[in-house]
Structures are given as C-alpha cells and as structure tokens.
Image (cartoon, rainbow, N blue to C red):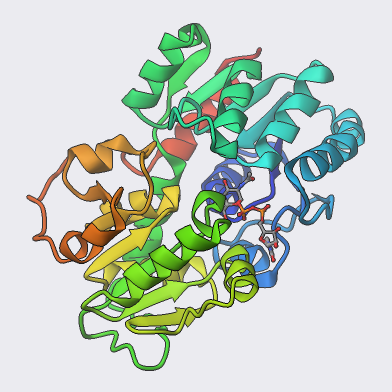
Length: 354
Ligand code: UD1
C-alpha cells in the first residue's frame, strides 16, 4: 500500500510522527509531502529531528501568504506530485491551509482521500480552520475521527457511513514524549525558576493577534498575572507585537522562541497552568494533567472543559481568577484514546479501499 501524507504546519508534524512510524513498521510505502507552510527551523525542522520523522520526499516551499495565495500555490504544486506518485490514499491532517489544499488536489485527481482528525467543529465561521475542516471532511472518502464528539458531528452532517473512530494520534506522541521527559528541567527563560510555580502561554490565532486592541488586552492580562508567565512566541505574534509597538517582556511575561516538542511537553508538565489559544496545547495540558485556560470563545476539544481541566476565558478581566483556580478532580477518563490511534489509522486504511 502506498500512502501520500501532506503536511505543512507545526501541529501536523506532531500528528505525522506516529503515522510515519506505523507505516514504516508495517512495511508500507509512505511518501511525505511538506508544503512549506511553516518553514522556520523551530517551526518545522526541529519536529522532524526530535520526533524522528523521515525527511520529506517532496518539499513544495510555498511559504507564507494570504489564504488564497498560500492555498492556491499549494494546490497548483500538488497536482503533479499526486499524479507522479499515484498513491492508494492521500492522507491529510487537521485543519490548516495545507489540509484543504491537499484534499482538493486529491479528489480532483480521483485519488482516495482520508482526513485525520475529522469531525472537529468550533461552529465559529470566522475561523479559517473551521472552513478547512468542513470542506475537507465533506471531500474525504474516509473521515478518521479522534473522539466520540467528532463522530457525532460527522453523523449530523450525513457523513456517518464514511467515518471511523480511531482516537487521537496526538495522544500517541504526547504520552510517549511525556514519559521520556519526565523529571527533566525544561529550558525556561532567565528569571523563571523551573522548580517554582510558573505558567506557560501561547497565543497565535489571527482573531487574537491581528486586532491591536485585542492583542494589547491579552498581553496586559498575561502581564498582570500573579505568577511568572513563559510565553513561547509564534512568529505571527512576534510580527504583530512589533507592528503594534507592544512588548512581550513586561510585568509577569517572559518571552522565548517556540520550543521543541519535548521541551514544550516538559514545560507544561512542570507548569502550574497553561494559558493558550492553541488546540493542541489544550489537549496536551489535559494529558499531562495541567489545568488550562483557553483565550477563545469556544473550543473544539469540549471534553477538556467537561472534565474540568479547561476553562474558556471569554472575559479577559477574569484571567487572574481563572489561572489561580483550584485543581479539578482527578480523572481516569481517556476521551482522546489510549495512545495507539496511529496503529488503528493504518489498519483502517489497509482495510477500506475507497
Ligand atoms: C497555522 C494554521 C493554524 C495552526 C497554526 C499552528 C491555517 C489557516 N492556520 O496558523 O490552524 O493552528 O498554523 O502553528 O493554516 N511564519 C513565520 N515562520 C514560519 C511560519 C509562519 O514567520 O515558519 C509567520 C508568517 O508571518 C506568516 C504567519 O506566521 O504569515 C502565519 O503563518 P500561517 O502558516 O499563515 O498561519 P499560522 O498562524 O501559523
């Protein structure tokens, strides 16, 4: 069997890691295509190295741009790649512009399409990712869902007969890396004691970074928190902070560049709390049992909220109370699977010719 995986952005490299390992272990032909959506070393190469992902077979090098330019450039370049490799499946991951470009390219060439992390919904049509998810799920021949909630969304949209619950492949990686880094001191910026109480924050979504007033309010909220806040700054955040004349090293804030995956997991495992707008980090915080506060009006990962490990900070003035809330009740629930989702993905791909 030949599978062609299309990835391009940081969270997709994490999801690719266990799939690539399973494909190799099962002796299948796995072609990796990197669109180049993320290209800085600490947004891309470091994940391939740390998570031992094979070097991509094809690198499209599309880089940044408006949604239309970025997605269109990928789409144009993917035609030839898919036609050349003629895979049994094209596998796309998550909800980025690389996902929807890969999906469109595959279905137009009549190559079976599988979508990993299918069925997530925020129901917020202002989010570019929401359109990427919905379009990709409806184009796909096979929707590989991470959770029961995702399966329910797919069923409501008439996609039940092409959907399979496989679990969340990010759990596979997160649990493995958390075990490997247990007890290691994370490389926190000067002034933050890894043995003391600190918070970890990431803010990168356009709805939080691109409006100067919104971004200033978030930074001022974080800067006023009663614990040191390590903010791992995504390039989009750094760019907007510069444009708007703001600072990421003010009050409680201590900025650092985006961390490698093992360092990030070690940092959140040792933290008193996480404050983020990232989807992956909400789940990873839950998996290592660090309380999370999400700077958004909704979340796709509703299980983290239902179990008490995540709260939505819809009102920024509530941030200090939210990050210092008491820990929720311990739970043995495994809404994101048992850490073997990638094995099931490969089994399902083998058994379900489109
Ligand atoms: C993308 C995904 C988002 C995902 C996030 C993970 C879309 C629509 N969004 O958002 O769902 O949560 O990745 O990080 O696909 N930049 C660099 N270097 C890089 C990459 C980006 O400097 O290696 C800067 C550029 O200024 C670029 C900006 O970051 O314009 C945004 O990058 P882009 O890939 O468009 O979106 P993300 O915000 O990273």
